[in-house]
Structures are given as structure tokens and as C-alpha cells.
Amino acid sequence: MAKILMKGNEAVAKAAIEAGCRYFFGYPITPQNEIPEYMSRELPKNGGVFLQAESEVSAINMIYGGSGAGARVMTSSSSPGIALKQEGITYLVGSELPCVVVNMMRGGPGLGGIQPSQADYFMSTRGGGNGDYRTPVFAPASIQEAVDMTMEAFEVADYYRIPVMVVADGMVGQMMEPVEFKAPVKRDLKPKDWATVGTKGERKPNIINSLYLDPQLLEDHCMKLEAKYAEIEKNEVQYEMYKAEDAELVFVAYGTTSRIVKNVVEALRADGVKAGLIRPKTLWPFPFKAFEEIPNAKNLLVVEMSTGQMIEDVKLASNGRWPVSFYGRTGGMVPEPNDIKAKAVEVIGGAK
Amino acid sequence: MAVVFKKTNGLTDVQTHYCPGCTHGIIHRLVAEVLEELGVLGDTIGVAPVGCSVLAYNYFNCDMHEAAHGRAPAVATGIKRVHPDKVVFTYQGDGDLASIGAAEIVHAAARGEKITTIFVNNAIYGMTGGQMAPTTLPGQKATTAPYGRDVDHCGYPIRISEMLSTLHGAAFVERVAVNNPGNVRKAKAAIKKAFELQISGKGFGIVEVLSTCPTNWGLHPLDSLKWLEENMMPYYPLGNFKAPEKAEEVK
Image: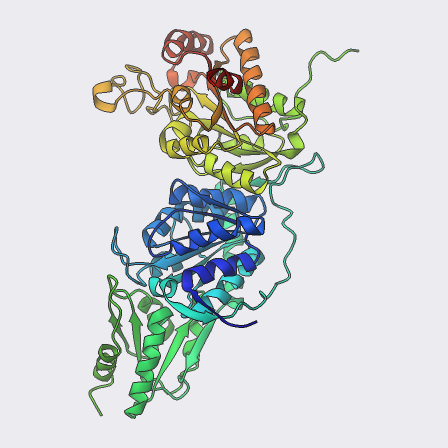
């Protein structure tokens, strides 16, 4: 299929429809409005339903209803709206319901701003709501990847019965790039025999629930979920190694930031510095094993559009093996290649 | 031998956790009987709230969701939009519906969401131990209003049925009580009407049921019924506030 030029937000929406999503519940917030707008236009043409909810909280609870009823459902928002959705996300996790939640991140805390940011790393990778849980998190760095990952997110969600986050910065949502819509890769999925579709008087009622008043039953439930997370950590890690094999200075960056860092890697290599990049494509599960593939590393430099969140996972991955440094811009400011390069030169001990 | 009474198939055999004298049991039975009589049990999906009836998902003999506090109308919306041919209902108390879930119920009604809401109003938070509800009457004592509800301090109780009946999307709004056999029969008729209107696609329907809470009111069950009649009914008058035939008359 030929490539078409599309804005990130619209491409994500189209990808969801192509992946079989027919129900979207959302609430307006910049910079992701093109997603609900596209859905409101296109879903009715595809036999689906778009519904604008009265709030982010209601939208995610409509998702809880729609998902429990057996449908492929999606909602999208941006940082403060995702914070509101956390109530529903933890109920979805507890009830083992699949869905896809897209977050086009903007600056925070509070109302923050509307420019690109990566300051929701903690909220995305540490559960986000109450209780013991994780959700898979895809972090696209291009519109093509946003499309492919959105499609895959639905499969992962259904396969594990878990909400899946697609987390990009507002830059990915707002820019245009050529993109190809390949047929979604289908997984071998079990029938949703747990869904609430009516008993027809032929079986016991299906109950969608996250309440376990008996602490032993709740612990058992949490351990069952824990085993699921272990499966996901084993099977679903995705990352890219960019010139990291011989690199002495290894950057770690994701999303838009990783694209800027690739330019810095090239600039440093032109100056004779062996630089490379580990790019997590899934933020959870975090690609710890990528750090076993950098035999010549002497320094790690984490670059984020935040004051430093992913760096905590990088330090866990490093486990004391390498010094871990950080460069970040936040509040909607995007790192400049020259500034990153200057930090890199400082980290490796001055210009050569 | 002729069968004169039989437990409805709309309820499971699970023993309920409700306190002695609580009227939730009656209301459960009315909803269950209506679903059975309409022949829709196998095509019904219910949504339980957070509050005293949080475990209702174990009692109704149909597919059920347990919702987050106050969000049942949003959850029901998601279910109904996926399965427009199914019967979808929420069962909510007054803390759940009139306080934390006020936005969800108002907008479900405004959208004319084709669901039925059973709203159990006992003027108090029962499950958490008798705190003040949005429906607690002026002067009524609660564990968080130990001197009685002071309207200068925390305002007046909300009349949900009157409020929702102003919305175009609400097709059916009726307030009933289950304090005596006559009213129980009227309550069942209203619940049946609300479900019938959902099935015929008329729009949103809500039945507000005045209910007792002997445990947290600190009254004998019989005195509770009397208290309901003397205190709740004057503030929350029984009657139909909205029905499709009334809308026709206005036209």
C-alpha cells in the first residue's frame, strides 16, 4: 500500500479503526483533539460509535463498560486528562479488561502547558492509579511507529486482558509524516467468553469486577496479575539499538527525543566520539536486557523532555556498572542537538 | 398443589448481606421480578454501584458489572452503546448517584441514554457507617453531621427526580417508596414502566425509591418506615415527574 501524508493524531485514530476498534469514548484536550475529531467523523462510517463523554472520568468508565461488554475500545487524552482517567484504568486492570489509552503528553504539573513533554513517564510506567499493577506502554518515535504500535496495542491488550498505553509527546501527535497502513499483525486470541453479552439463560452470569473483600482472595488475584506482568516482561520488551555495539558513550532516549539524539550521535561520531543510543520502544516492560548489549560502554547519558524520570530505570539497568548522567528540558521545551552534544562532551571529560 | 408464591428467577440463591429491616431486599426483588416478567433476564446487563448495594452483582441473576463509585451511568453507557439491543440498568444509592456520580447521572439523562436507573434514596451513607449524604434532610443527624444537617453550613438536600425531569433526554422519572404493600406495588409498576420504555427505545428512565436504613438511622425497622413517611415523603414527594404520555400532552 502506498504511503500517505498524515498528521500523527489522525494516523493513530485511523490505525485504531483498521485494528478493529469500533468504539471510542473521549473528552477534548489539546494537543490530541484530532483523534476524537477523526473518530467522530470516521467511526459512524465503519459501523462504530463515537461518543463525547462529559469528562475524562466518564470516558474511561464508558471504556470499562464497553470493554467488559466485549468490544475493542479506545480513549485518548493528554497528560492532565490521563491523570483523571487513572481511576478507570486501575478498575480495568483489576477486572482484567483490555483497552487502548493514547496519551499525547504535554507539560505539567497541574494544567501545565500544551507543548510536547515526556513528563508522564512515572504515571505511565508505575501503574498510575491505586493498587499493585503495571500496564504495557508503547512509546512511538514516528508517525509510522505510532500507527504500528497502536495496532499492536489492541492485540497485546486482548491477549493479556490488560489496558495498554500508547504514550507519545505532543510533537508526534501534531506533526505530519508519510505513513503506510500495513495489515495489522493478528495474535492467536481466545474468545471473550467472560464478556457481558447477556446469559441467554444458558450460562451463569458473567461478572466484571475488581472487588475482593476477602484479603486472601485479593492477594491471590494480585499474584495472578503479577504472573501476567512477568509474562509481559518476558515477551513484550521492544527496543532499538542505534550504533550502540561499539559505543563508549551510550545515550538512552525515547520518542521524539530519541530522534534528536540520533543526530547528536552522528555529530559526535563525526568528531571521533564513539556514541550510540538505546531507544526503549516499550517503556514498561523496560528494556533492561538492552544494557547487556553495550560491551564498550563507559558512560550512559539519559535525555528526556522532563526533569528526569526514565533515568531511574536506567540506573536500575546500569546497577552501578556505569556512571549515569542526565540532560533534560521540560515544560514544553524541546532539547537542542547542540546542547545535548555539549552535555555529552562534558560527560566524557571534555572536547577531544 | 397450586403454587401461590415462588422466588423470582431474577435473583440468585446467594444470601444477601443487607441489614435486618433494610428495604434493599424488596427493591432487588421488584427489579428481578420485572426483568423475569418481561422475559429479558438473559439479555440484561446490570451495573452495581459502590455503597450498600456494592455486592448486587452477586444477587441479580444476569450479567453484571461492578462500577467505580458514582460511575455506573457511564459504565452502562459503554455497555449500551456496544449492545443497543440489550437491556441495561444501573442500581445506585444516593451517595453514589447524587454526590460523587452527579455528573454521570445528569449527562446520561441529558443524552437520553437508553438505560434504566434504579435510584435507592435512604438519605444517608449506609455502607460506610452513616455519614451525611447529599439527600440527608435538614436537621437529620449523621456521623459527619453529629448536630444535625446545618443547611447554612452544608446546604440543602438534592431532589434528584425533580432535577432530572427538567432534562429533555429523561423520558421517564418517577419517585416511589416501599414503605407499605400498596406502595411496593406502585414501585413495581414504575420499575416495569421504566424498563418497558427502555426496550421500546424511548430514552432514559429513572425510578427513585425512598428506602429505609434502620441501622444508621438508629431506629427499629417499623419506626424507620414511620420516619420515612413523616420526614422523607414531605421533602421527597412521591409521584411521576416525567413520562412519554405527559410529553405528548405538552406538545
